Length: 247
Image: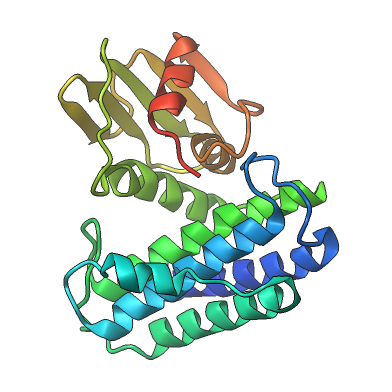
């Protein structure tokens, strides 16, 4: 997927998230994030948007300081929170759409460019939390198949390799992820000394196949195995999801 497609989805999902929040209210619990209510989700995601926009505008290739990060994650009270989220979302979109294509700034895994990295990362961050809000509202969620496959790739090859993530397993395990509506597939092997991701569906302790949308939500801990086919040792999925916990 290209930058424009990621920005289109970032725009649509952020706006849908805000509209659904009007339906749930700020005090609604978020089933997929048991420690959160909607206000916590908005504060988190608004902070993430501000953080990403700050990084891109800074032009710095070093990670923002703890002091800067803490300030960016300061959210207002309930009366202003939803409008604050809408403002942070709009500002992020403006920052990413107006930045020069050759902008250089800090990223935390490889990407074709700084803007490509942040457009993709923020699109998936927002999509997953849009699903969270829909779960809180008792609504079903839809994720386009191509975007879901792109998100599986981003999770396995990028997000889980970010600094501070020590993904190891003893005994080792392997899991293949195979969308049945996309040509892509991945095999992740987690050992005592780290993890490796291979392109394609190789031999694995467990192979999980199904629509890319179902696999995307499963891997992000937003859905169970409904619609997915498990071949091999089902305990591997539970072990993998414990090791690769993502909020």
